Image 1: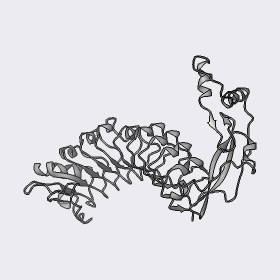
Image 2 (image 1 turned 90 degrees about the horizontal axis):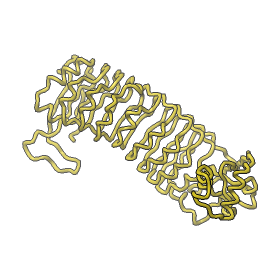
Image 3 (image 1 turned 30 degrees about the vertical axis):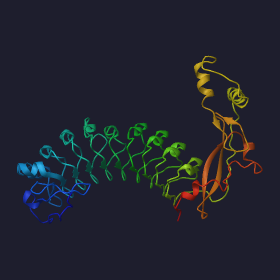
Image 4 (image 1 turned 30 degrees about the horizontal axis):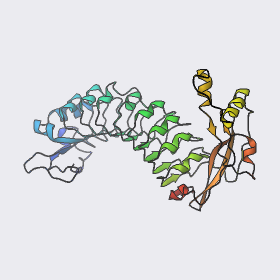
Length: 381
């Protein structure tokens, strides 16, 4: 696609004459040029034109038919738009729509007819969670959605239904929680949630197994779910300016992680043990014995609830302990050396207080533990 040319002067009149359209020979993503004489894609630029919604509607409608078929990019940033005009559907080959820095309060139903859209940018507008049409998922080719700097208090359900998304920017909103439905975005590679009000993440976040960049800075997170170890493709995890005191020990299993930003968190700076421990119930004691003695059982032997309970045992992380736990556990902080320079506190769980005895270390990092060597940058300062 051809690159954007300079936008119109802000002093230009708020009409179609204040914007520009250029048709240039197209270049495909693989570098092959289109055949000579073909119209090629073009960019329609209405940015900084002082336009209101009706001005953009008129400007889009008044273009000749050959422009309707050739335009792949519409830029209408930094105007006074309240909505997207219906005339946008005439641009049947539209791939990119940038409406950032306006006053948009909604995406109208007509946007779902632009079925070739790959990128929508609506940063710094007035969009809320109710601003999206129910058929938003009809945009089956949409891979990038930029919604940072709006008024979202949660991730819209309509957005979670666009399963083709690979890049989702939701920074600088008012989002206080991430729904379990985030698991539907299986193709997600970049997820930006910085600058919100998140206090926790759902376990289902670990199902985004294509995720490469995860930005969570400037929130209120105190911990991460253990399911992060499933994010095998993760390369960058930005957690700075949160309330994190420790990280799950599973983090060290992320072999592709190259960037971990932890600055401005209340990370503990000395070896800490939390010995808070509620004694196990009689049912847990019985279940521990069954698992430790390896007493066989099947779903036909036990009520369904007991069978399910017995199958959810967790192994104690102390390599010298063969015990398990179910509900009663001891939280334990162990510092692990990353890159020989930083010591990162990792949170792990033990089956009993005795497993944290210094003579029986709960977690040892030996020379064979090479996962931490793959961390190239840990930003603590």
